[in-house]
Length: 141
Length: 141
Length: 141
Length: 141
Image 1 (cartoon, rainbow over the protein chains, first blue to last red):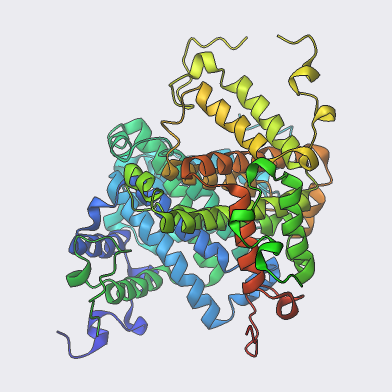
Image 2: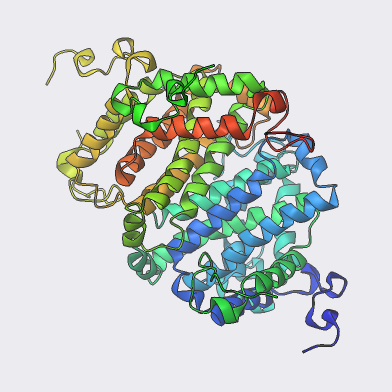
């Protein structure tokens, strides 16, 4: 038992953060938590897909009735930002569990998808235009 | 233009994968993609929360009509797994964009939430029991 | 002010039920509730679409960790059924508000969509097959 | 095969609409459609809850990147309104199927929930205030 909570990584000041944390390290945190409770029996891909969607809806609740500009300003309030960040962490945590249940390397999946997005939405065509406004004269060839 | 696609990172064999990829590296991929298209104007927290939920629903579609065991077996089929992995990558990609729009370090948020989960669901109490079955005689003190 | 709550329709035994209730009557209940609180200012189509999705996720929560057969059996438990029915009512209530905000007759929209579904999924082709298994030799002509 | 499409109710001019359509009539349309295809085997409460959420997300897609005022104006465009109405009809259709799978009278469920909402959000307290801003000095007694 550590004498000081910061030894266990409880202190966010000690947290290495996104710059020094690999995806595998975060995945391991989730995997250990699930294994310690023998919860993998509940973590089928079907149930985890539902769980991701449920947590995504809880994240939406923080912005449901706010105008977009209000919602943006709410993120300058540390209390509201922390509450929304907790929901975002839930979504991401279940995404890690899902990657495990699917047998997928998440970094490879994200890199592969971003390459497809670069092909589907060339910067020269879509700069400043929303993704649903595909120009009629677009030539992707 | 590189002579070899692997120079651009297209080749998954060259992908360092979750073990050697930091969260910041993946976040940067998404941030650059958005910046090159000047899409940050659309990426308000409210719109991104909707986008995460929309992509989560597209992930669910892959398992909608399957029995849980069928859904698990479907992940042994490389084509079906790759299709579902693409949707999972979309969810995660929007989560990275959301972390940016919220000004949140995702690794810190995930670590902090996992610590709260450890307190809320002690392994000694919940081992083998689903999270919604909190025992009446549970003593968390 | 009625002397007896059943005069106000509080008593489900007096409720005319689906056989004798028009869609317009239920829509009116929701419209009056919103008008009395001056909440139409929050009920933009964008916010209501989010609200429908949020309530749909709360409905999913009742089935998240259950095997499909367990979930079906849970609906034989009056307490669990009532709790899930409350979430379903929330989804439908927001759908009524959405029809109002969109200026849409819901019965016409449902009838029109069911006709399209009949064309898209002919009974002779899809009987006993899931909707995603469109036979290769299907001839819809 | 009818000589005139209006005989089959295809012509929206002949549709009785929300004023003259009972909830039971719409539920029957969905029930017959499912029975003709022997799809009740797929229509477990768990799967239908997922389906409602999936269709809700498709409805959100129509408003995902629009400012709230733009989204409202889009509903003045008959083509965009019809496209969104089709998704709304999908959500409602699955809600009818869900009521069937759960054994619930939807009109009773909606009336009961609206009564609870009247108690939870008294008009005198919440007029003009969003539902999440419960006043500290509120006296519901």
